[in-house]
Length: 328
Ligand code: NAD
Ligand code: UDP
Image (cartoon, rainbow, N blue to C red):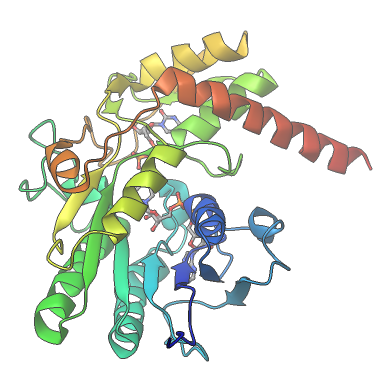
């Protein structure tokens, strides 16, 4: 009987030292894959992959995907998660964010083409901008300001979707596009700047909870493990599933609701303060998950309450570890 020289699947995770990427690397290793993590450590941390480093099937390459990447090994699948996802982070160097989205996508698509690999793009609900319809289905083309402070990310991710679509058409690359809605959970950096991490850290420290605007804007929060189940299921779909698919949780909460929930769960006495709303901050966001349910047979299982019950202890442990480091 012929045995294959390469029995295990090799998967490259760009952005693999970040919040979602590091947990995805762990899941893929557990499923028996060889994992190559590529990251420039802009918003990711080596501590996120500490437990993986040294495992025989895991390797880390420090690399910025705005530059082409050559590998010594054939890869079968590529997840492109490389891009800062938090608004304050992606706005620090907007030109680099746009380059990451566009040149990064080009470089990884070339790699996928040269390897005959399937490639998945971590796109975003931000392609819908400040939506005029709710819930947002994949057919909605969005309402994005091309010159606002969020444009480097929103337009970058839109252009990346276009590149994925065109590489599929022009070069026959097998592509997957996940439109990810706000995702949170253990593994998020306390300094990340997004709403769940900000509120949890502020509540645990007894500092004021900073609501931007009046808190009436809405988001739909997906627990990290549900999201990863969706990404892995999308990667496994037949080749003709090359169109965008929403992944998230369709429970919709105001930011004021989220603040109350986190105050309640942490038992914090933090006050709420109201700061100005950032320019172009979307007023509502909720995914239509009909396509995901139909194509992937997937739907999120973890409610916001359950997810926060698992996430708040994570932030508590991070703050404790930080204060021990500061003392020693
Ligand atoms: P994150 O910031 O924790 O992770 C992003 C990772 O990409 C970091 O490790 C960072 O160092 C790395 N990176 C950034 N630019 C890079 C570059 N040029 N070259 C190499 N590595 C680079 O964010 P996350 O929440 O884990 O998000 C991961 C992906 O999912 C991002 O592409 C993001 O746009 C997408 N996404 C996330 C959410 C969410 O709510 N978490 C929602 C929509 C889309
Ligand atoms: N937000 C807030 N206080 C914070 C951080 C964020 O009120 O400390 C609001 C922000 O204005 C937005 C929502 O929470 O309306 C979600 O923000 P986040 O940065 O998490 O993600 P976005 O969906 O805007 O990319």
